[in-house]
Image (cartoon, rainbow, N blue to C red; front, side, top):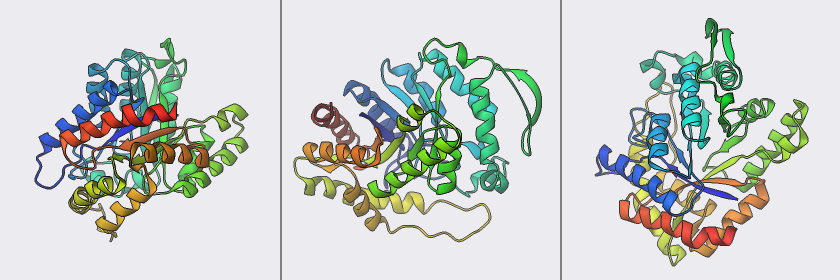
Amino acid sequence: MHVGSFVLAAQFPGQGQGEALHRAVRSAEVAEEAGLDAVWLAEHHFVPYGTCPSAITLAALLLGRTRRIRVGTAVSVLPTAHPVALGEQAALLHMTSGGRFSLGVGRGGPWVDLEVFGSGLQAYEQGFPESLDLLVRWLREPSVGADGERFRFREVPVVPRPSESLTEAEGPEVIVACTSPASVRLAAERGLPMLLGMHVGDEEKAEMVALWRRHARTAGHAPEKVLDAPHVSAGVCQLADRRTDAVEALVKAMPGWLRQGLGAHVTVDGRARQMRDPVAYTELLCGLHPVGTPRLAADRLAATSERTGVSRFALLVEGSGDLAATEENVRRLGAEVLPHLT
């Protein structure tokens, strides 16, 4: 089992953006010190829900500041990026970090980002498969050309070519954020592992893994690749000596952040959207994930892994909104939870 932290660089009410980013960087550094396996970085634009607008840029900084831990994006929003540009950056980080970089990608949402970056709503609604295929080709082949609906260009050499790396012959791993049967099938047909969201529980995640396996087998992927696919499960982790204290820390802090952050999203086409109740959502997350004592957290992670077949976790550790509390949370995760999982 591999346990990592999930970093949003969340801006809680009353905090500045610099404070949120400093907490994000510091929590990642502490994650390496504490013995965690990975740090996963979220990307958001124009909202305080997350103040990191480029997960791959922050990944570069953290790869330079660390020596052992894997750093991944969870996720880089593909509809607002050119897949070749993103592929070049991923290849660069893969080769210069000794293979410690993972590229997670997703569709994002129908937000105003699509207008600002000029990609348009079609890139979100129809263009994700084309972008994903072009990105994967860039990371696997020596030269690439395109003749699709969105991208058309002559064949050009891939430089730097990640397949030249001695650490992973196929280049950096690519992970796809999956939230629907269609996205599960998209990832499975390409043999790409999934990132599963924190808003769903073990039963739904198990169903998504089973669906992924069926589609992957139908697509002809090797049985061992199907069974051992390194999916990642996102969740929340808050540790305390008593479960009530851990829950209280999140219920006090997270609803204000969720209300402010999620409420700031603006749709590109004016479509109506419904926001979850922040308090109810926080309580839901506390019930689904390792929130409580270290022993409870270890048992819950082990149970989730057994029920779902997922062996990697990306756990939101900054739910208190406080830097010192976040550092302590990460250190306890390393010292008091991980030993029970090995």
